[in-house]
Length: 287
Image (cartoon, rainbow, N blue to C red; front, top):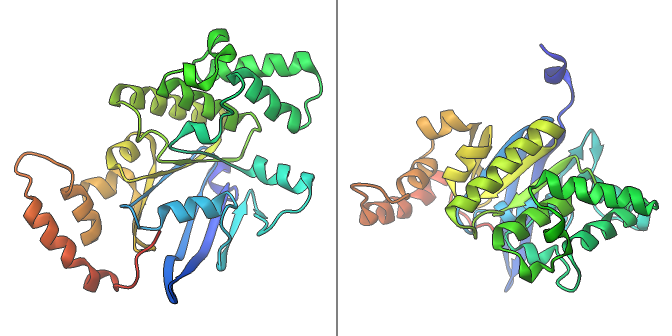
């Protein structure tokens, strides 16, 4: 066993459950979710809309509070609620998120460099020259330069904006980076650039990635393991190559079969989908 193998997980999730009440009906969004992530690891959480993967991402960053279960980051519980500036900053350093829409994390009124500078200042960097150097380093890390640093978000391409959002998230040196459909709105060539960037970052920094996606091709490219969710539950959790080469659960098989290919039969896919509930225990769908 290596030192890395014997180290505690970077992220440990145990028994997460989240329910909502809609019109007097309880909807189970996430039910008994457990997984771990090592330093420098990358886990893909895969599922269709309504599978519970986005609710999971929101719990990991504290936007939603689980009804049950525990989230540990570097062995420390992720607080269910935070009060005060110090607690908020500590949570931000534990887990950051990159959304599908980079505008959610970039201030449309100021340049990219100023946005990142503000994050550094908020987290205690009071030396202006040191902050400027760090802004340059972060932008260089994601393949952006002085021109992009001075630009407003609307003057950048979609891929550049997403790179800037990643740089902003990395500014606090988080232990874990959650990416919620972070490349799904990008052109395929730009997707590849951003995925290569993420692979380089986790190799160089040891950051852990949780990649939330409906796209198995993206997960195959960047992740070591994949966890397949359906109606809030884990259907399968295995190394990516094994899971894609030999899917064991009918839902995983359906996800793979749903990707258009030669001989693709949409009617067969629809029939198999209707047959899923008895195999998964049915129940309300996740969020």
